Length: 401
Picture 1 (cartoon, rainbow, N blue to C red):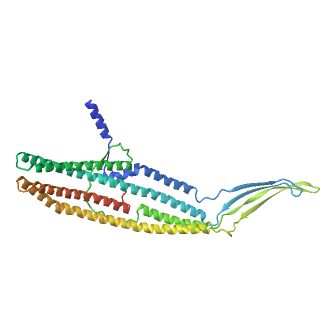
Picture 2 (picture 1 turned 135 degrees about the horizontal axis):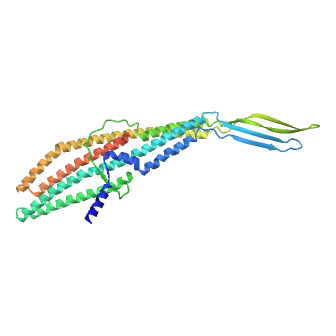
Picture 3 (picture 1 turned 45 degrees about the vertical axis):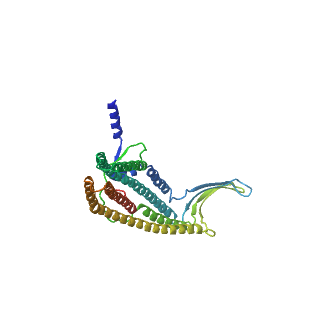
């Protein structure tokens, strides 16, 4: 029975998905259901492109008239084709090609946002591991201190209040560790759907957050949504040209012909036929498409202004994220290189002094709490640096490897 339970446990653990931070982007790109739906927009745009820029279908007509006292039997066949006088067809092809490019950029923009969200959650999860180890180390120290004070209190050397205070501090650290476990559960619940995993599927993140290192400066002009805005502005300008091209409707031209039966006095009936050429030219007297031209011109101007505003917003996001990275990296260096060594040394001296009866327990607990806060702050600064880096890479469009 124990062997069967062990086999089931090993089988369950073998199915656990193990990912590193570098694996998040490919996993989101391949398995996120929203991306699979977004890619269909490209197929829709390509379908519209297939039907754009084509001539209208030709028309085949037949006209037959029976004999009357004034006219003989006549029949007429016609074949007509409409031709544009402007660049309407080429502009329609250009507009749909821009639509395909815009759809592809929309998919890349969805990828950018979803990958940034998933990587941010992964960073927060990876940041919980050192925080949890820190709490465990502090719990061990607090447990040793609680045992020490209890033994001394039983011998009458320390106050029973010190022993109770030490046990209370150890319990506080256990509660903080439980809070981290609850936070891990919440983050995993948010990350799994973004990776295309069901809630019951096990997930394990491997690796650790590297030390803060500032990346090189990256131009943001290649970001997907900015390029999308530029493409949409170009498409809006093409729509203006297309609206102007529609001021003149298509010209129809074709062939007409057919047999004709004539009756001549004294000779009986005589069959004749005819063939001719027909042209139909619309006259733009009452409607020159002024309304659509004005509408498309306003749309193009709005798209240009929105593109300009988006560029300024992206530049601000990238600059702010880079400044945040610099601040968090400086905080990590200052805490680890200067403050923590001082606090560790002070804590060690206070613990030795307390064991020798030269200081009270409150000073030791205060020093340990200060050490815990500094170490936790350094870990939080590393986490916040990587979150700012994700925002910077998302702002510059360099998230995707």
